[in-house]
Length: 302
Image (cartoon, rainbow, N blue to C red; front, side, top):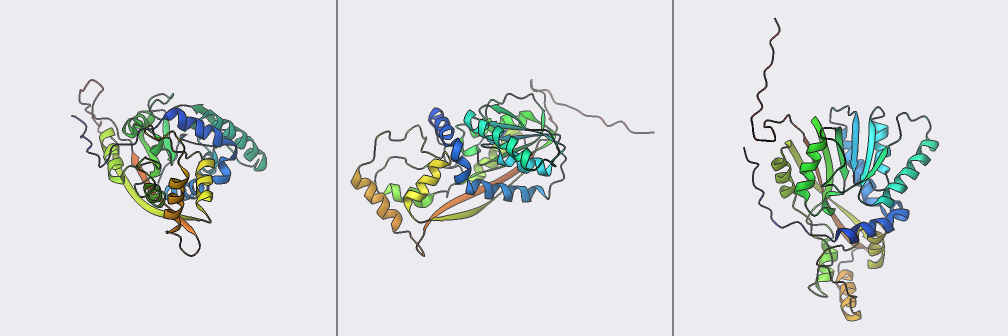
């Protein structure tokens, strides 16, 4: 049986992954100071876990950054071993350092320290069916092939394991995109996938009962410089492969500032983030890798 074809509203953006990795590497030492949105979304993800019956033995935090969510998951599931994975090694160094500090601060916490591995989401150095829960907070929109990453997540999940993730949706940074469009036609702000496209990818990868929803979070800033500084400190540079490598001229930059200032409300500049939440279960396979059907028989008890 063939997986359903994916008809996407827009092609995924293509990133210069080396540039993105360098940006996150540079951001690692001060990432936590700027990661207000990431921490807020993590708390809202954790609230959703309250309604899920799950006792994971092994957790993968995919795109773990500096490891704050690993501590959150360790508090919720102290019996589970944890793995932090990120494509920027300096982020993992900060996560390891943070884990030692957190353990010293709260020595009463049980459980082992997390393990860390540097890898891309489409090629995870983990065995098939080796984790019970994959947690991925605001990582998927940094992948050139999100469908392949979702397929790889299913590979490493145990049967009946859970994938829980967030990513950014199409309305994210709409104000910034509009302001830059008044300057030139070059791409300055990343494009983001539609929630329904991601849901289709989950179904095509073989996940069962995918649940998707979204909400909008608006942060406000004193100035455009403050917004751009936050984005830079969190590693969110323009890493599009098609980006303009040159500097923007003074007149063009003035048009950007003027365009954004026109959106000021109550003395503050808004920055919209569309947060897409998703979770899905990994069902027992119905087919072998060579296409043969798997038939299961339940022995009746006499």
